[in-house]
Image (tube, rainbow, N blue to C red; front, side):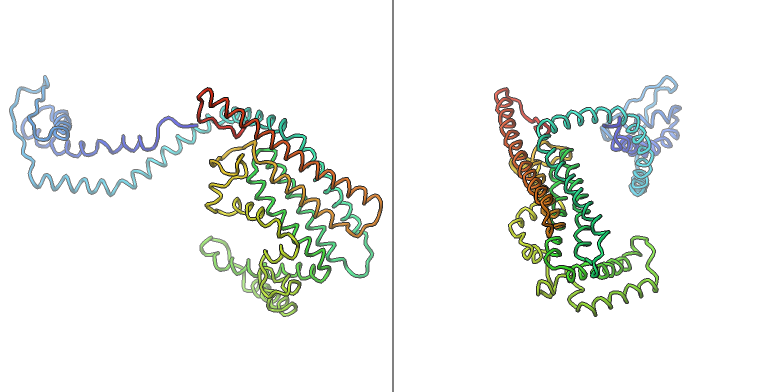
Length: 428
């Protein structure tokens, strides 16, 4: 979409004639003194002539004026006055620009809004066609992933119901933590599905990064039991203290209302209490895992290593490119056939297999932790069915990706034979 006239052209229209106008104003007085009846019209023509031709002879003919032969002198004082007026004009340019921008922005926005309905309908038609092609290519694999996420969600609901009926004397803190993590994992998995279904594999990979982090925490809490889960929940106090400190430091700049002394005192008291209970290392970013890892200052990499997720470290790093503003993310793209491609602000039909396969693996692993102690035959059958479903989904995504690559190469060869260039194949 584009509006008719740019702000640059409007600005040039406003200021481009100003030197001529300044000179014309000066010449008006001199022509009037010389007896020229149409001195305004003559001054304007003479000013234009002088700016283009310097001090060459000028002929001005007008029926209201008799033939006059006059000579005009531009004195040093005249030059100084013009320079002063020009300097004043330069000083006014920012104000002129701002005024024109405000005036033109209203007109521009009105034009955009008038055109938007038609433009949006065209976009919707194009995107619907793209979604149809994506579903035709990836639909069978996507259905397996959708079914896997639905079944895992059902298992989470069943475990939450069982937990609510538990009459255990000791509160099953670890089970509560796993159920809550599983709920969040299912939500993230559905977000990933939404991104994949709409052709955003880089965004889906970025969301898988979050799912992978949930997976690692779930593995640790499953192994560490109630004690580690208690520390994990208590660490919310540390996070709240850090958030409160940050808020107090930035509220004046952001315009937010600072926390009261009473609120800060309560936060400080809670923080001191949990640090006293769990030790000074508890105040670190992952202090809740310090004792479990026997590490006074653990990092997330230490958690991943203990969880046995070292093999996923390259994929995790790869996914991180699209979370942070890394320059690598400008070059390395999940949504391209070779992993590297031009940046695109739109959807693509390529690269969907990687976030989908990773999601299938992660959501099943997190789900399996919920009822890992179950020994029922029904649960064993279901778990084997879910594993088979996951493996089928992974294979189908890989097959679809290979077919896409073959189709892409065929289309490129056909375009090359026809000497057609600059065609975007990302939405084939």
